[in-house]
Image (tube, rainbow, N blue to C red; front, side, top):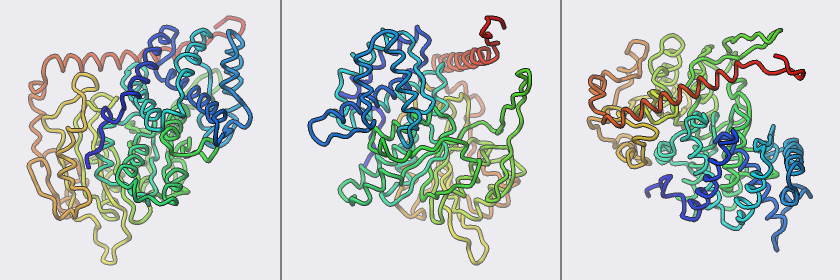
Length: 510
């Protein structure tokens, strides 16, 4: 059964809703409200509106906010009073527990013009019956808003966003089941988790027991996110799609996933950990002097100690998996060939897991321009009595040679990954796989005997796109890509300038 693409999944009603809400984003941009800030404000207001609807419906009323009709308060207020009431409500709800507290933690009003805030409340959100539209419409609308925010280079939102087309292909390959416990230790806005849930609904809906339904919506799908603002987007995204309860336990944890061993384990891990290599912390000293220090994680459950957070995430995901569990992880090229501790980790993975498939991705599909990444698929297995490696063959699919994508000029579509999914042969014995020019199998002895256990099999795949790669790209596409890179670089420079700008003292001095 072919999964729905991001574009086909969004209904006509949901798309109309998105267009209506998104049009107002351009108005607020003139007031300095970023795309991500706008989606965040929508998160707060959507929640308050739905809580109002559920409290005031004719049957089966639910009082999510425990007597607080926040939406009515906002409807009744104007001007300065509206600003004050909105800030008060956000602060009060931020002290709540569970999913409610996660959504409103450290929440602030970013819309400083009361008239524009009033219009957003009364006309754009207030005129819709969100609880009555059905989970698919409101959830799809929210998902589409998150996708639009990720496309805005200046907002920086894309750094938390994995292309939905890639997520859909990966999920179809690993085939989540109703009995899986699914986790993402770097979940961003929750794309992997949501798509796994949708896959289960789409393929098992008729056979789900009441116990399985309850389990999937109350804890079998969980995520971790480092950034507060992104975590609230993830919590709301899942909630709008029927995962979790407003006044129940939060399914999105906030914090550094690498800081301590996991207290829960998963049968399926789906993740796109941060691309940056070094883990570091900023220490503020006297006189506002600061320095950055490498952050080293001392965990007894790790094979090696390193400041490379990409390699640390690989170790963390291994410990996160229960025996028999499987994982699909987006990793940059350096994880495949870096020496020292990198070689140790790769050797351990090959020995203690069945590392069976590697998808080589082209540059240009992620927010971080120029990043060359891969998806590594593996299963964690119990130790073998003979001490031999669990991995017997690593199948490598080359989706990089002669392929070129950008975020705007030449986008990645789900159909571009059809050939890979077909070659992966989900649900079938891997012995049935067929080698092609793009899909090669490498024996474990060959892999272990390569220098540094190098899994970057570029030379073996004879990637001809390296030489004369520019000739393969149409000039207008190349020019557009260069413009995107310059725009992103300028945005980063502006952000850095703002971060270094001295702040005014209360007396007005510097």
